Image (cartoon, rainbow, N blue to C red; front, side):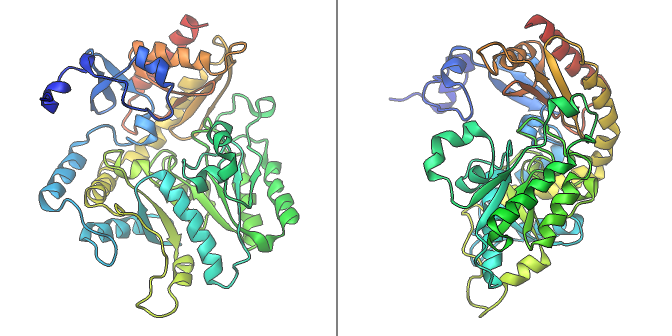
Length: 448
């Protein structure tokens, strides 16, 4: 007879690690050197051996209000006591409508409709489908091309992966990429913008590559451009001054929809609910996820303007206008968490707090300039990256060593390639930022 589940998992040291195929993880290495967290609260994790870690990346850019905020926890528990699941096709439940209303009321003015998904990956694929279907609904079905950007990350669905520009995510699946996709160049240049604070002055000319792509393919074939206002997973790549504005101009001139992927940048990461309030550039569609529930329950979605939504609302009323959706679209627990999270962000003035902490984080991370193997530091909002010189023949190994050293010494950072990323909860304190940066400094010396 099998052991009861609670006995199998009562001691983390007795876990059988082999059955789980972990995502985006060096599985063989990890299972020889496991790192497990068993509890979280506020800005801290607790490890299986009882140590506390400062969470310097808000989970995976998602726990913006910190871990286990009591108001969000309470809302989820209350919802579970009332309704666990409701079908979202031809019926629904009140909190899905309430959350959509709250979002559209707080989003930039043109956005009047929200379509719910379960993740950022699904949100990005949904936005691409909306863009294609929108043009077809308007009788402009020749627009089938989608434009992304090098180093862009739009999740791991085939649409977002095709439009995305991260080589390791693409190379094994090249034969199945969706057709008609082209890419803008990324905007990162160590030569011209190393150690920039905030938006670089160099690089607006890179937006002109979109005009070249339009001329190459003809505007009549291009449906949408999808970019992150700030590229998070690519290594906190900050848009040059004027770059987003010029991308918007070219899209408008050519009837191309502009999609901002705000899965990372939304809900306070840049000090505002969404980036148009930060950069003053208005897209046609916005994808969101992560911070919408402060990471407590999976939820994502797409915000659409009234013009886009209205283009679908044609024909007989009994007909489905958009053949797309998910079993868990607008799940009761997720929408309850989202409503509570928005209340927390507003009642505790967390976006203003993020704006106040931005210069403190900026000064702290830029103090690492000149430390061993640091080749660049960049920041925007409550996000920063420290780029390291790679070890000879061992790309990403130096950053991995820094990650491990920080973990073993009380701080959870994130690494990708040879970049250490920081994106703490909006509740982070000045003293905790100092601990994070000092720990990274020590790690740079210890692993040099």
